[in-house]
Image 1 (cartoon, one colour):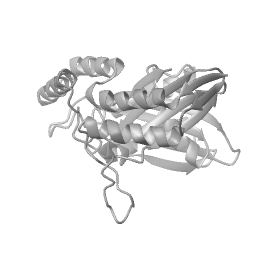
Image 2 (cartoon, rainbow, N blue to C red):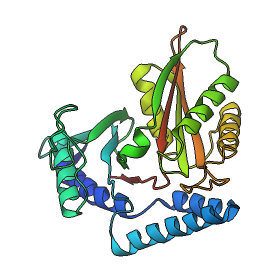
Image 3 (cartoon, rainbow, N blue to C red):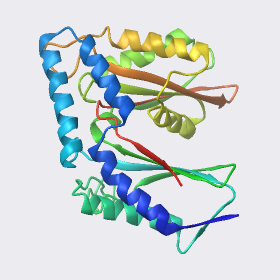
Length: 279
């Protein structure tokens, strides 16, 4: 049994809440640069120049990449041989998010009730996912999720007779309807399988992927959806459109019930922010 003080969890999350808002992951920056070189529309090229300039300035000055610093999503993979000590892990996580948001001058974006809309003024509660895995390590992932892109997401419970091609068309049509609302160029996370709540988690988890799916059939689906999205002509938030609407498409799957085929799409803007650490 390995003991870990919750103070270590606090310190990690406190720092990651801030740095994830200041610095894009290297794979996302690489995707943006590659896509900028592929863009043919002159106004869209200029938009990419500003996107790149913005994330470089944010990293240099330690200021938020976007004014919407997001509802913080925390994902923990906890080794089953871990024992947390010196405090409550749930309270520790929320305090670290609140303190990190305050000291990092991040916008407070959480309301305490869906209809009363009173701001908590702490950027909490964060959304926390726990997963127990073998071993004695703790992997922490922080994802600040902006409202604009999150609003352009969905879950559909489809019949098992739906084909891969139909799913591809459903996703592409939804991106078309979303237009510039999710701040393209976008990363599209797709969940297929599981059940109603799990498929949404799969779609969000897909946004953290760095490579294409290892299964050939899903890798092909990712490529087909990606190509179709980039043929829509939406482009990177300019009136004249462009040939780059998506930076990447990733699919995560899970077993599901014989009577259903759950589908979820979770979209992220070009500022696809996340950070990971293993303790």
